[in-house]
Amino acid sequence: MLRRAFLLCLAWLPSLVHAQEDTDWIAYRDAYRQMIWFEKYGKPKQFLQSHFRLRPRNKSVAMEGLRLTLSSKTAQVSLTLDALGRAVLPFSKAAYDDNAELLINRKPGQLTAGPWVSIVTRPDGVYAAADLRAACEQLLAYLRFGGEASGKNCVGVQFSYLKTDAVQVQFRASSGTVNALTAKEGPAFAGDVMQGFRVFVYRFAALPEAGQVVTSATPLAIAALLE
Image (tube, rainbow, N blue to C red):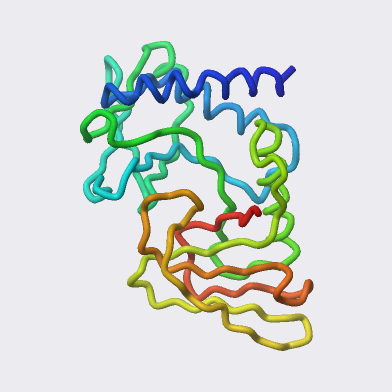
């Protein structure tokens, strides 16, 4: 029953996005209904996290100074956005009952908005290879649950940083061999129009199965590579 309801929610998304093209606000109730599916998802997800994300439709839309505000009859709360446009959406019964709005300080039609699931980062910067494989599989399972990623497989993960960050990402095999992952420039997530991030790709098949990925700083995001 939950899966059926989830698919029905996805079916409503095109009309919701179309409505957003003509306005600079989003009904909190609509965002709440989208975001709650991750909370209700009953399969393993300990390596995953869900955000409410704003994404530019084209490269000309600046992310600098972007603000997202939860506005109700009694209060206005500024929701912190990271460099990728992600925010933690509060689940508030009061805001839901009050028919609150999510306000964006951009012209109508410049951004898309909705749930965004990614892999959890670790403060110590050390990721077991087995955990990264499991995280990728969990994300793939979640997407398939919602009717997405058909025919895709997990081939690796990607660590993303700001272009100016001087960081190192290494794979340390259980045998003691150390391989430095090569940085390149690109988007933090596949399909993003935002470019210019410093990204490190860890392909599972290219390195030993047992080991760790060690980062010198916490990444902005870890994305699953699905091909």
